[in-house]
Image 1 (cartoon, rainbow, N blue to C red):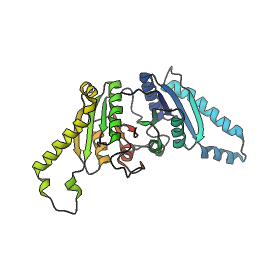
Image 2 (tube, rainbow, N blue to C red; image 1 turned 90 degrees about the vertical axis):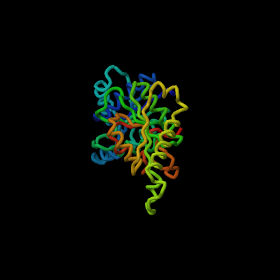
Image 3 (cartoon, helix red, strand yellow; image 1 turned 120 degrees about the vertical axis):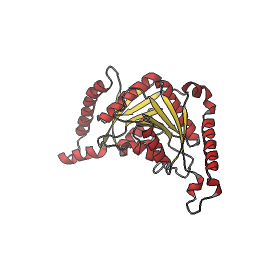
Image 4 (cartoon, one colour; image 1 turned 60 degrees about the horizontal axis):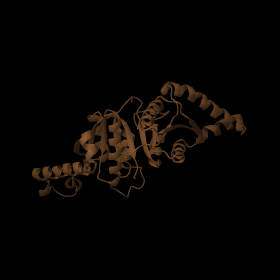
Length: 296
């Protein structure tokens, strides 16, 4: 299994980014990886401040950055006592600033709170945008997460990116001694031909044969990682659902998973844009933390 060498964590001083920082410290320590925090100040905020005082003064920018650094000292002491973490403050679009920082620091992992100042139950726009553009794995941490992950669900669609997701998920499981569930969500081919009447292939016997075949394929898909699989002993699940994304979200809730791992590109290569894909839905709606893995 691969080792992380560089971790970047985004902070906006909210309770959600506090959980993200604590998780980033834990992961980087286990991997002996470098860790850097990044706080991005929205460029429009600075423009509004300059407009309010009626002058473009470089000291305004300096004061804003100084305020952020002062807030960081108190925030870091509370979220990660005893840790010495450098802070990178930049003025940019929040998501683009985080993605740029991940690139510049050659991050293997970008850690973010699942939502920021606009708290809610679904992922914020900054987090979703960052996942879409990130050059590396991105972990979105829920505010109620603390400590190790206990139950990891890895979503598989048999694509090359799913292989990367399995490796990443197994690594988290090894780190935390977590229970692992490998999941494949499918739509039966006969149900997708909605304009046709029921066919002989949709008989109960054929459905069972189809399902058993998927189960064997799923277990076989993990076979190249036998050493890891034997030790971690994952449980395999095949779930029929009308929507791949909704099926993964539903499984995460019913299995009480605290981390879902999946690839950002699946078998549908036409979705070169992450927006609207299965992964996009999972990132936005998943009830637990998410680790999104880009193509290798």
